[in-house]
Image (cartoon, rainbow, N blue to C red):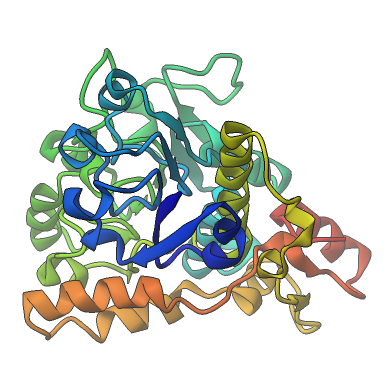
Length: 368
């Protein structure tokens, strides 16, 4: 049996070699010629999965270690009789940690965030967890999600656009009653209030990047944080230059989430093959140590930034800004490939914080 596996998937050799010969490749190099004689394919979001890739191949199982599946044509897989598995929710906490890091930078103390309203678009795995943490921190929220009922903070789309902060957590879709491609086009972007902060950790094309750049050229009051971009990895340097924070699609890249995603796909493959060693036997899935929340932190904002500060990832991406378009694309992928081991906030122990601070840190997602 032959398995073709994205080289950036951690632990791939150790986990999958028991099933056959493993060929590891860059995700963007996986094409029809590579997979024609493969039986199993394990990928990330950079590989387009459709009939053009798989028709005529031996592939019978495709696993994507990602939460999102906009790179996958499910209808094609169904027509070809190929089993599919992915990893919904695997990196949700990592993305929420990233958003909290951004909020901690924008609102560094209780007074600065007390009167703000955070708008959440999409209340699934990521948006729902963000809502729960913000609720626990006592932060006012509004939520727009036409697919989820029973949310006390639910509001209309126009109302969520009027929030001080707008954080996007939707899949990228082009069909149905509520498509999300260009959910924020020129008209919606222009409706953002003065001094608003827009955070996109969903998919690049949820926001019309050209319209966003045009708006930022006209409105210096808006703050924009982008972890995802249209046409990745060929991002627009002029747009990066106008962001408060710009990062290379790594919000969900905490090692906890990566390994969780691999584990979910591994279990699905074992189920498909009706065999496989238990996950606990693999050293590759052992998490690195996290540590203790910095003792000098006296607020959840300081604690979050002491464990993860998005500015470090911003600096690495911004260093590419003056390269050629091809070099920016190569560098973007390299930053993702070589991303340093980051732990989720839930892996960090609170330590000896005072009781009032301890309650805040627990609400933010730290481990007691």
